[in-house]
Length: 257
Length: 222
Image (cartoon, rainbow over all chains, first blue to last red; front, top):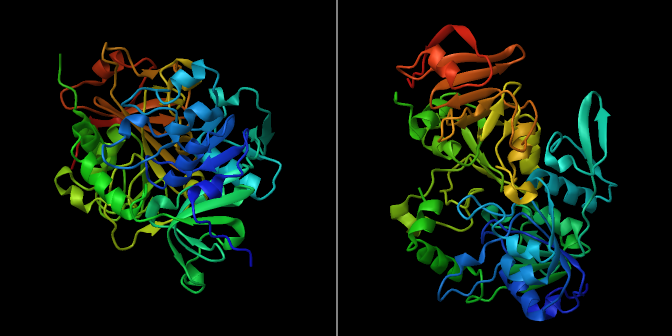
């Protein structure tokens, strides 16, 4: 069996060429592959297409907490496919506005449609007929078809070149389990991409994951890197980050009852 | 000017629509407030992959917050027995397969049930879609909560939406700070009015002609 374990994040992203498409998770910092994103920022790869659920705004950088977020990648992007380009509190389009003026292309989609298009990409389907978006501005430029009396829009599959995945545990074959809502988009992203790179809390021996609990089988995972204890998004650093955001009044009110 | 219901009371009234055994996904705005009033036995779902999760972490117990347990708005919640965790494909199958009730916020609702809740103009970047369109199209019942009028007093319940649509003909029930309205094939039926308000007064602040229910009553939280 080929060794899938890489010793550094830089090595794991070293072959990503300019113009590549990358799919990765982002619900705020939850489930984000911060170390792989950071390595790609360091590498400076250009003209990327990013497929993601949202972009975390840079204003959430916390002093003393190492962190990367998808907004760091904005200067390197040619195109983004996403359902979220802003949040209420910061204004619509707030995350991308400056870059759109400089030529960034934004393809809006609903989140469920994004999931279905990634599934279609993973399963080698030619596309999907989708009831969501009918009668909205998302209709523009899409084939409309009536099936059994209901209107649908044709949506193309998404087959990204790379997926950055944030797992909890991996074994040496690349079998993955996730932790809590970190799972979210990651399993379908791992299946849709041609090359899937996972950063994980722990790498365990074969047998260290109960086969009944495997969520993403190792066939979908090409590279694994362990997140060091003091690295971005580690359990320890994340805990410290939550303490810090609790000190910021507007974020505390946003994220806590 | 007569007093309208405050947002918290609108949320309480909306939560009353739910029954033991229902699964519900709550949108942003007033719907978020409903979380505090969900009846026993109702399971709350969040798009990022949890169903039947526990109460939100309060501002004075931040040490209990765990990054692995957050909702779609990034808010922290507590895990409880009986909850389920799953991936996004499973999550949107739940949402799109008519198994879920959703309570959404709204900018405008039209007479025919059209909903606009994501964009106040300014083109494609004028708003955030998220999972709102999926919920509006796929839920078995769509309850929309909103203020009855804009701050300047213009109706939000309109003949035709002027803001970009979220979905066509998707709204079943509208709950505002003045009224409870059902969307039916015959038109909008006024079922309940806020205490102290008459049907005629509510009609005056509503663009489409309302059908007054025979059993019209005051909004009641019990």
